[in-house]
Amino acid sequence: MRLSATEASRSFSRLLDQVEAGRRFLVHRRGRDVCLIAPPPVRGRTASECVELLRARSPVLLDEDFGTDLSRVLAEEPVEDRPAWGS
Image 1 (cartoon, rainbow, N blue to C red):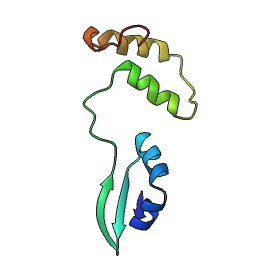
Image 2: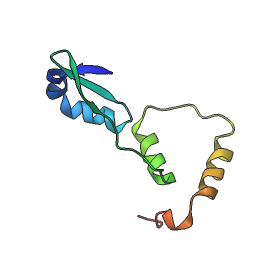
Image 3: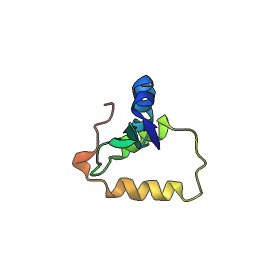
Image 4: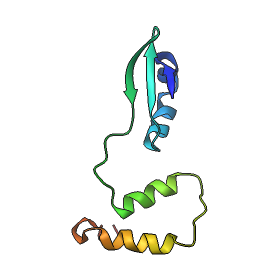
């Protein structure tokens, strides 16, 4: 989405909330694009990070293969990257 520098400054907190949810914004000033506000590059996410992202979003409908897909993702995650229980 493209927005003016004035719009970005007036709603910066809300803008950051949307960026945190994965949206990207191209900011322009005096008719010229000046910056891109976007989430940082992601090398990969742990299952717990994905769950946190899902909790922050609107509810979704899960298909019948969701459990199988989730089990496969968890099995492929390196053990050393998994958070300890209760953390």
